[in-house]
Image (spheres, helix red, strand yellow):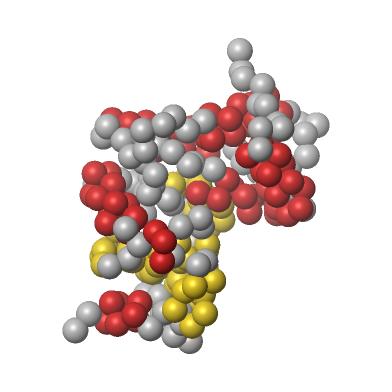
Length: 202
């Protein structure tokens, strides 16, 4: 008997809303295609894909296998029908850093670049790398925590745009380092709708 599979079968998700779940599972993250639960009594999380995206579980697992559990990515422990079991990471996303005023250093940016370069060496196409998909661990290391779209054929400029914004704006001493959620969300929406153009570095 697979305990995790049984646990997943007891989770009811309608569209992107978790209707029913075991009491011992705590939601620690949500994304465009899945919700993430902390597994009790162990340093692992359960990533359950929304009904329309269950096919992505096998796809993302295959990408993790390509990455061979590299330092810059969480460890994959198990894959099943519509779910993954991954390493639990303690830290904060770059999104949280902006909300709490935690300084994002140039070393963090360089670590993300190294992580994405490693993926490219594996003939993958790093995509959808944004503020909520990059985590800064308490020990200062960086993890890229969502790789499900690393095989898409189109070029994704999210990270390059973020990096340009970091060097052109954020890195300057006069630029604010802490923002309320509504400000960050407004900027994200404007960017996604093409109303914000990031000035590229020279």
